[in-house]
Image (cartoon, rainbow, N blue to C red; front, side, top):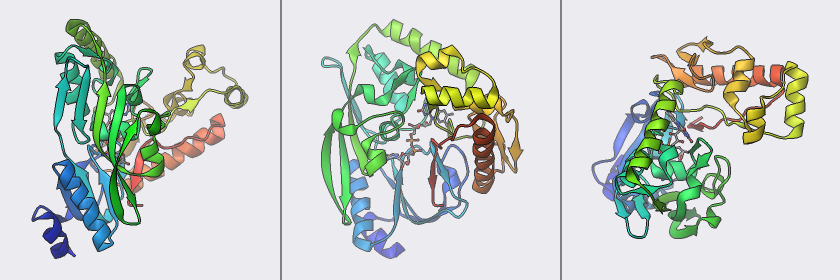
Length: 324
Ligand SMILES: Cc1cc2nc3c(=O)[nH]c(=O)nc-3n(C[C@H](O)[C@H](O)[C@H](O)COP(=O)(O)OP(=O)(O)OC[C@H]3O[C@@H](n4cnc5c(N)ncnc54)[C@H](O)[C@@H]3O)c2cc1C
């Protein structure tokens, strides 16, 4: 199979590549085959190759929101590394390949006096990953700035390019049509607004400072669980379980942070194997050095069970499990 893959994709196809080298968690066994696609064309070629050869595949980019299994992945793992980026200052657009780094885009927007992405300062990963999961922070999310997406739709092992307007993307809280229905994002068109470069930089500096105080620096995949949507029912259930009121600030913002729910169960610092609930932020599971995916799963299962039993709320993972 490696020969057939190399025939189609070139000598760059690797065998038994450790996935721990390609994600921020630094966890994960080997990918049977691994390919870094450096352009949209190469992404498409790789997707077509797996269709022709009938093998399993998985597409990712920055690796900052995934947990790879200790057994790795039995198929071709395609890393989207296409990174062309063009800023159209006059019409306030940024057009980027899916594999372009989100922080480079945020920086380019600032340098060119375009406002709308300041909130995303400091979020790792690529713009493709951010669109797929509708990444967000400080009350904003990626979908707000999306004008158009070019993606590969894959059906019956055949792929075709499709363009999506903002409405077609069906963005929701950490949701998009690409997350629900699949597809590989190739290109992103962002629509921003004219702004003052100094003010944009000031706002970004504030965000960097806020994140510095809050976000753990140990290896992780970001917030592990999704926050919980506020409903009268949820607020009542939490009160019944904890005899505490949900803070009004959360009710006003419409989301109960998973970190607060986990904190209610006194789980900060809890460790299984090398996986630990960060002391700094209860919704971060960190790799203290030698964590396995099994450690992370055991710890996340414990968190879910405790939060369900003691707070009455069912948590759901934000991090994507791959190869389980
Ligand atoms: C320290 C830290 C802080 C973080 N802070 C935040 C935060 O504030 N807000 C937030 O929302 N997230 C945060 N994250 C999570 C993560 O950075 C974002 O979700 C990011 O947008 C993921 O992008 P990625 O390229 O790394 O995606 P990956 O991890 O590579 O992939 C994530 C998922 O997207 C899919 N995917 C990736 N690229 C594509 C593509 N081109 N087409 C289709 N599917 C694709 C993958 O299959 C996978 O299912 C944080 C993570 C870390 C480690």
